[in-house]
Image (cartoon, rainbow, N blue to C red; front, side, top):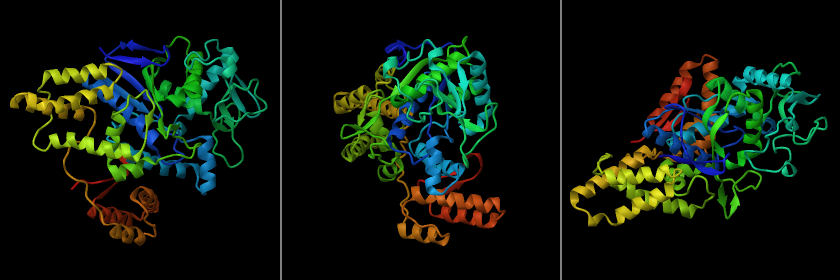
Length: 465
């Protein structure tokens, strides 16, 4: 039976869902800057969860949000001379590229904060009318003192609490720990009309509103990095519970550990960020995914290029199994080993240890059983979302790329840096009805193995040969 560590109870719990349709919400990216290794870890860790639940024959409704309005997005867009929507769209393309390369399951629904304003205002109005929120000249705030169970999720004491990092210390708040539900916009900032003045949502209220809008009630599993426990998820829990007192907002809270570089948490403030797409281009999505598999999702994970090289070599042993064999669940004991590890709070390092111990002693088994063990190992890795195709990715001559991008007045440094500019150019051409040139660009890049997609699944990817 599946056991998961619930951050709320601080213990391992036997998972019991109310129905076979499991509702999962993952806090997705704030699209202010390029994805880093830490973003990849959170996406992959909970992709293992979604895939495993489906393997257990649960129906899963998987939602991953996009925060496309935020203080830091506004600040960075201003520094780059872009509009907030231009920056958000550009960065989102980079995230979508990384998710595809990591072979992460596409969410069933991927809501954006800017598309949820009406629901955000409705929930703030409920909190205001119930007396949990108050308005000032700077915005609307949740009054923490009115909510008795505040800090149950994080386990912090009131004396430890300070305002969240994304919240300015406004002088007109009643208490420093009160957090923003609605912010009155400053001049030239994006804004929407509301009963309290033109403004934009606070960070925390976005997720509560999206969950309420999509699921019309509580959810089974809420996921995210453990840096979100406080203040983000603590505040989500407080405002959702206060607004909808008869609902169990979240049954299980799951949080992944941070990625460390030389023992330090990898973060923008530390200046030690490693961009995800650069490493994907060097090592492949499979290898990065395998690197994440090696550590338990709840624990910190040390990052280095040496560890990526080691992951590349080790993962090749799995790929080599697929040269002559097809993934099949033909060895019951190996499949049982997989279930035992995953049922133990998604214990992927334990699984890997047992897989390679089994491969190390493979010659002790009869030839037919060897084949079944190897087929089943391949099957396990397929379940976990690895692309076991042995086809190499097409190599593209950099001089060809430079010439092609130069043709459209775009400098080429890498595909990850230059393709968003090309995508933006094609969007402008299409908006101006210059479809012939837009189509020409798409066809020229398709000839060298780069597929550009329009419409709902807009973006790009590299073809395999």
